[in-house]
Image (cartoon, rainbow, N blue to C red; front, side, top):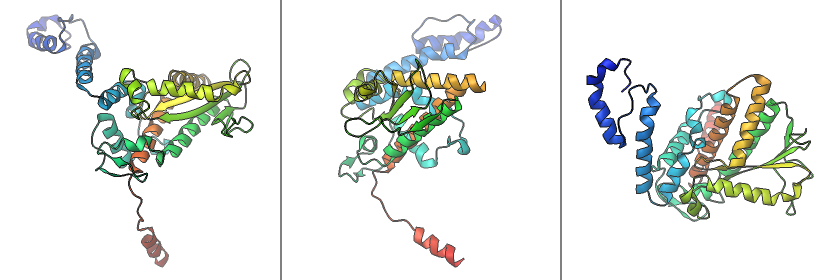
Length: 304
């Protein structure tokens, strides 16, 4: 569709006609030299048609995966030493969840609930194996990012407990802004669980936005002494607005210190990878545990 010479009108006429029929728009000027400008109207039309035809959870899933944050992990360079490589099972589950494909055969979860072929139950099951590992991984990334920005931070800060004894996930050890230390708490909520599905059908990021509000309310006793920031992510990709702002700010501070202009993007990709890895562990963790052949390998190793 993009030609450098206007003399090729006889060549572009038919492709342009087909583009107009597909996009439902008049012919654009041939001066458009960016392929994205030709692709976007067609892609937007396809997205609208998919949303119109989708039902319930499929519509919520589509809205979620259309957000910018949901596809960050797809752009990450798979470097094992940096924790950016998904193993085969994680990649398979991540792609299937994103596309709405079949993840597993129907079976009974360890909690007793039935798991369908889409495997979504594992993302909200209270016995999910990946929830804690995902939570710890994201907190570790945030703490290391702050340290990279010359802002020392600790996890599980003492002395900030709520009435029930629970405390926030992390705190900077130097002032972050307005002379106050930053305190944060991480959560990853399921986009399609029963308590979020209605809101997720109306707007992408509904679940993470509500989670941020709940976190702010839970830690309201810190107001005035600290700057509290909730970090709320969704299983299908969207981030809460306050989460997005904080991660962007941390990335900018890393750029100021190191000169790496892509620091913010790298940080966002790493968090996205950890969310996907946690999703896969949650889904695969619904299968009954079975004993492996580790003891046989141990015998063989000792005899050797």
